[in-house]
Image 1: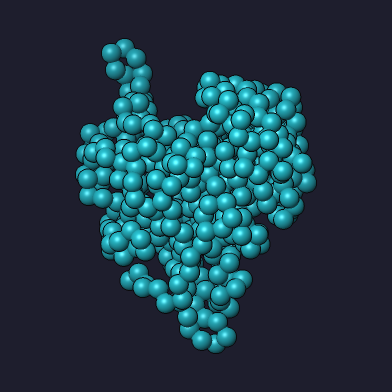
Image 2: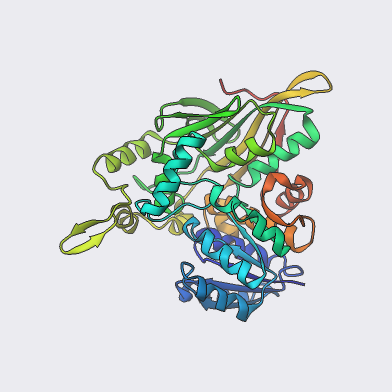
Amino acid sequence: MSRVLVIGCGGVASVAIQKCCQVSEVFTELGIASRTKSKCDALAEKLKSVSKTVVTTAQVDADDVNQLIALINSYKPDLVMNIALPYQDLTIMDACLACHVNYMDTANYEPENTDDPEWRAIYEKRCKEAGFSAYFDYSWQWAYRKKFEDAGLIALLGCGFDPGVTQAYCAYAKKHEFDRIDTIDILDCNGGDHGYKFATNFNPEVNLREVSAPGSYWENGHWVEIPAMSIKREYDFDEVGGKDMYLLHHEEIESIALNIPEVQRIRFFMTFGQSYLDHMRCLEDVGMLSTTPIMFEGKEIVPIKFLKALLPDPASLGPRTKGKTNIGCIFTGAKGGEEKTYYIYNVCDHEECYREVGSQAISYTTGVPAMCGALMLLTGKWNTVGVHTVEEFDPDPFLDALDKYGLPRRESHAPVLVD
């Protein structure tokens, strides 16, 4: 029925690819392309005996638009799933436009080189105008709206769990539970234990940049920025228990504030253990989280890239990780003239994920929504051309797909609120 090209073959991409192959009646042909073709070949060999999907592989440098164009033109897919790094979002979008192919990704664009003068000037102007200083934001990809509309193409942004499913939860709450939403708190809890003193659950560069950046939240029509990790709350998560969580800046706040403008306050919280925070602060204090190149023994190195080489590969955490994740959204607002609250969330088990697809739950909770988002595009359930985030589409078929393929929703109509 469809021909799909996946760019990337890391932990999240591996999950998404395996889930695509479980729906071979839609994903009839799947191309996997990565800088390291051997990874693609190993996964293709694994899938050969368990799926009817025809899987092929290729090598590509996703930073090189010309290589991407050549690959897309040779494969001729109906959709390109970008599950590489957010550094490469724009080059892959450019290639999709050149080849007239629909596009999707799991995280919004951020630059690899934050010292680039041209980028820096635009970034500093945005910080002043928008009021938050995180390196990642939607403006770079939203700038492609007219190009995709004029081409009659769809670009689906941020279709992981957060962003992604959390935005679908917001759209679902708006459609079914509320006439008016006043506040949204997005809670991301990882109750898993991998046994290492320090490791990140996804790409260390992206993860550590996100966590060490100033926090921010949306309130009464503007951003409020705070020092990193300066707002802490405790919450008792279903099937996980009590955890400390900290307010972070996160990309879906930006799009939800735009698309559900009545919301007075939107916050994002993520849980961290004290050991993780101590290690991260120490590394930051000695400069290991820096993206600015330094000279070491006659060679130029980027400290955070060197740190990434020292840390455990997130894809290797699957067999070690035990425990569960709990990710969802708590809402306050009104329905039928009555004040109400509502909580929609998912609980995911690390060990069950590993038994099914050989990954821990962090990769699983991003890879499954990527497949389900692709399913929406390929079956025509989401078909509005242009550049869009998940909450702009009908949430019902997407959440139904998540229920079916591994991330079922849970609900509470009397949740404990976050103060």
